[in-house]
Image 1 (spheres, rainbow, N blue to C red):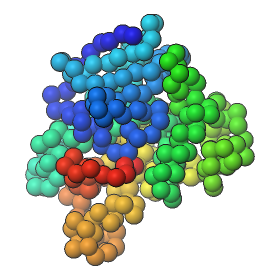
Image 2: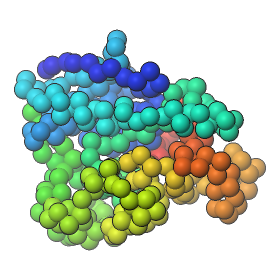
Image 3: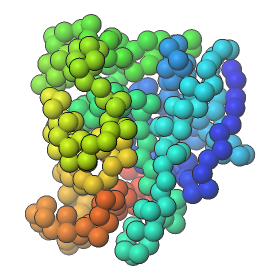
Image 4: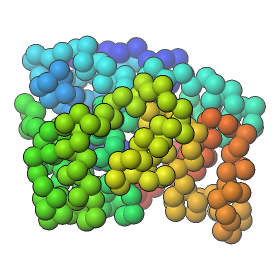
Length: 298
């Protein structure tokens, strides 16, 4: 066991980042609410290790369950998944000018938790489509338990593309219970393992957001909703990523509980421009930190 600290930005909220959306509820993440810690598995330069994050005196305290580890690799992962290098000032200024979702600026919220790799976020995003959260959790749990490489302490990493490519569609259908996604997982894993698809490149892509969305949608199983959620996780918030949960929340909060078309929802957040996807998410999750939610949302 070894512990080191990472200094956080001045405008950063550990609580609001960890609980920003449902990723904390999906393995390999482990949220310990009693001790207020978030654990994950870092690739650690090729040897996966179990890492636990908590708030420390100078920022974050990082506890690594290993005697030997690549500190730089683990720090990169922590900075990436908690979005420590994201500049949120423009969003906060936009919110304050709009007089809407000001709570996010006041709480230093708005950073959306993500996985150590875009690959993991991609697979998990496909697992969220057209199903309940319980089904999403079951699929990701099965993927980790069946295909994830074990750490020294027995925790398992999220499976690599190579590990997933070693199984056929029948495995994903019968063991993972992925339904129609079974063929998608088998094909996607093989494409990524062979280098034909490179999800990590989306983080630094020079493509416009519209073109990057088209690139993401070339992956079978990724439609508008999944692509716009993925865009948020690589730092682009142009799309609303509307689903039934967000729509219902908008109807209740801003339309007297009555259904309306998506164009009205889009008009409501248009003033946020390139931040509109983050604005609607913060708007719909404002009460998460004052009320207990029975089930996380993606």
